[in-house]
Length: 280
Image (cartoon, rainbow, N blue to C red; front, top):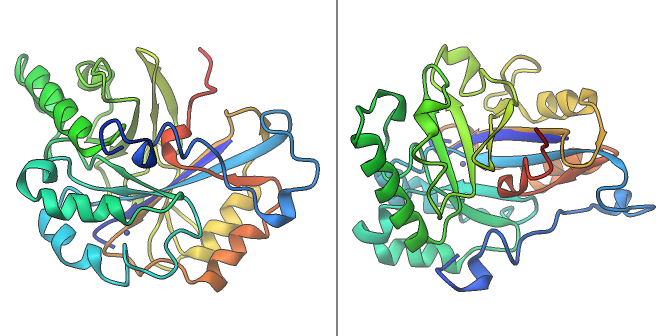
C-alpha cells in the first residue's frame, strides 16, 4: 500500500538522459535497515509511502523560497524519496533554473509537473478543444523538462477532465489534488487510485502541514501515527501519498525523519511508481 503525502511547495529525465529519468534510474524503493531482513519485493505485505511537494506551479517561488536551505537546498534532502513540483514551462521561460534543479537531483528526487501541467488551471473547466491544446502543450514541455508525472487540480473530480492528459505520451502518471475546504488541504479523495488508459491517477491521503495530531493536515508525529494504522497488502495496492507544501514548515530534520524509519513494513518510493500494480 502506498501513502501519498502532499508537501506544499508554498511550504516543499533530461530527455533521453537516464540519470534524470523517473522511470529508469529511480525505479527502486528505499528499504531502511530495520526492513532489510526477509525482504522479498512484491512478495510480502507492505504499505508504500510516497511524498510529493506541491506549489511548483508558482514561478516566483521556484526562483526564491524553493532554492533556499529550507526546501530544495536543504541538507536533509535526499534522505527520503520526494517528488518536487516544478512548472514544465520553466523549460522555456527559465531554462537555466530548470537545468540547475535537474543537476542537483539525488537518487531520491524527481521533478513533477505542477498543477495542472503547463500552468495553474482547472482542466475540468476547459471547453472542448482547449482541453486538447492544453494537454498537448503540457506533454511537450514535460518531455523537455524530463518529467513523467503531472499534478492536476480540480473541484469536482471527473474522468472527463483527465481524458486528454492521460493519452499524452509524456504523461505516465497523475496525482489529483482536490480544491475544496481549506481544512482538507488537497486530500479530499483520501488516497483513491484510478486507472485511465493505463495511467494511474492517485490522490493524496494526507497533507504534511502544521503540527496537528489528526485530521487531513497533520504534523510529522501525526503523520507517523496515521501511517502506523495503515493496512499492509501484498503487492503495490496498499499506499499513502502525503503532500508537503512550501508554505508549511521546512523539511523534517533527520531526527524527525527517523520516526518514519522506525515504522515496520513501510517502504518509501517516488510517487511515479504508485499505482503500477493496480488491477482493474
